[in-house]
Image (cartoon, rainbow, N blue to C red):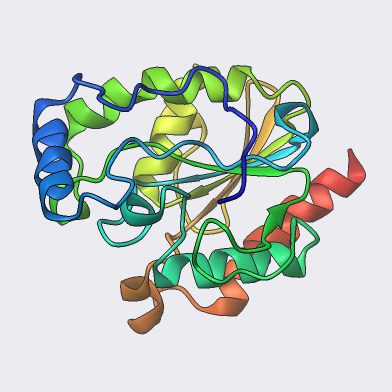
Length: 221
């Protein structure tokens, strides 16, 4: 398995803060002892946090995706669309094969989740989202060259705005919406889940438009 650069202030593997998530995590450890089954760390480029200019913030690990593999958006359809789009805009390279030891590398970008542990039915509660924000803030503060953030879904968007000390009314969620919060450009997107793409709520061109906007901002700054 590839060695990844350490993220700033990661949650401990046996994080006890959210009892429901901890219980679900231990349930899956018993069922699948060879899976990751822990808080999923931020995926950083090979040259570490200092190279990151774009951060992608998702919702939470999927039970058979990142909860299994230990890398955000790895092992489920959402990762296929996300990393193909990031490659298209020069934010990733290599081959994404849905496993953490593939040749995929990020380029000037990082990927994390608003909630680090897998939630039952992929639905974290408000208190769980709020509690996990203590691990999002150090990521934001630990990327010295960060200029832009792509948020995937309302939960990720709202938690990111709050982590930056912003007000939701000043940066409301909407697909393709852009806002400036704490000196950073935030570009919002519907989540790249299979449900959203199957129902047509999110199309590949719509998703590409979000990353195009982020890429153009980075190139201009």
